[in-house]
Image 1 (tube, rainbow, N blue to C red):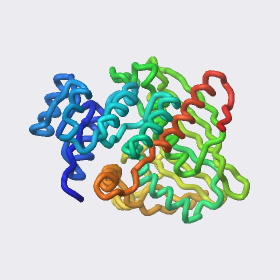
Image 2 (cartoon, helix red, strand yellow):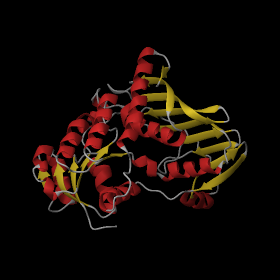
Image 3 (tube, rainbow, N blue to C red):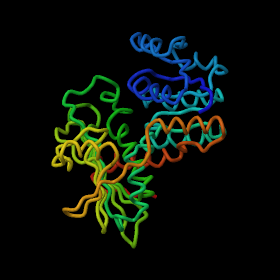
Image 4 (cartoon, one colour):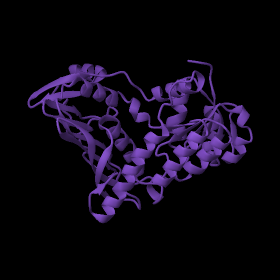
Length: 351
């Protein structure tokens, strides 16, 4: 890895401090400037990064743009567009957290602006580098499942008492459709290609925003005339989270019952002796299942830090952009169709 780059981090909350800062540190990069006003978060930033410059807003930080190598926008989603535009106008490369924007219109506008600024924008779709996603890609490429017809992925949690933060309160920028749906749809599109129709059921059970999400997507591509359907779910009021991933084909299935090492009530590992369970979990990611037969699948190498390793290569040696902004526009189009589908109780066809 090259010498440390100087990073300006916009926002030091759940995303900024909880996700971006640890990953940046792990790959040897330095957060030198932080935009934050909350006194508790300011103190945390100073403790985490001795000597860090704290700015009350992005405009102030950008007056010292020459002291930075790139900017990470980890502010609430509703401010992504303004923050990204400002950083690009200062001629700084930008990493913006997902979703890229709250609407398809704004997502497209940011992708066009990035093109006008020599492609200095990428999107934090870090789940592309998860071992689970990479293992599934390898399984699909191997042909072990035959012709795939169904992809299921769940991101469910048991949170009957909502957290008091913008993601649970902001009806324009919050909710699980934008938050977790951005990851779920990106994963489906990356694996199975463009989406041609969307059906959705969205509910607000414990918060003012959607916290119970179901999406049924039909992909354009398929094998031997069979189109792939993706069923994606996200929920905050799920006392028994379902299997994380299930992919069905005419030659077998791929099944992942845990997520981030958290077992579910449906785990197929429960009847495996403890010692063997530990060995399998350390080296494998999911199972190929054919009826009563199951075979553990070796885990592909992958980690969230790989996103930022790709960012460093992009900025220092001209490597490919980690996530093209237009790749974030496609999920935005699907999520917009999902809102329309849920509101009108019908299937929405995408052009």
